[in-house]
Image 1 (cartoon, rainbow, N blue to C red):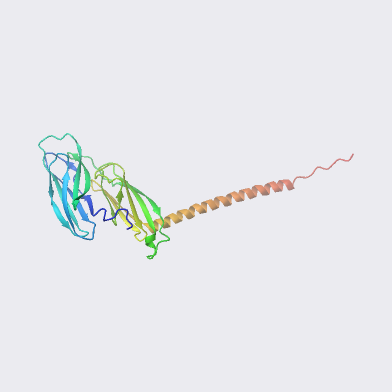
Image 2: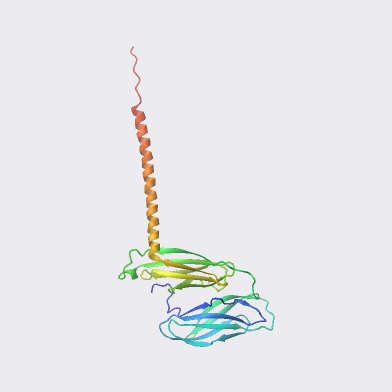
Length: 265
């Protein structure tokens, strides 16, 4: 497979749902939904769980059978607390059990609603590696590979989710939803899969979408290389002309020197 992350290693994709409230008030119940998708070609029998320090939770549904490529939204309800909470920020961990093996997604939950506003989308940039110009045909595209490193950050409300279509982003390490730190992800594919879309969303719902085509990128890289070669060639011609002018001037000076006549004795 071309992607860095295989579906076998990650049978389910887990994300915090768009518009989720990551602020908890002890006197109120807070609902945080998670989206779970089956990445395999067969049905999955899954169980759900969650943990947030000593805060009691209610999970609905508690289990499900996911058909291939189907998704389900699981709601984690944080119950009211009678005892005081001293830590203003906690990490909520959501569990999906597939054949008793846990797969997790964590989110940063802040105590009490926050009043800060965030109207700007996350900032993203990427670095591209690879060239598919020699592997553009169906019979040889599997032999060529390309990769991309994506960096995203939102220092206001924090990054909620980063998605790719096709699926295949690999995070090192996987980030917690709501983080304001820089998040780095890697995407790798064969030249047969030349296009990918990235979706980056923050906690307040602001998002940015970036489409990428490896063949357009390869063309751009070729154009840049041609420009660089052209610049060096132009510099070489300029230097050669200057050297030629200096040589001609020096030659002309030598030819214009008149030898002094010898005096007769």
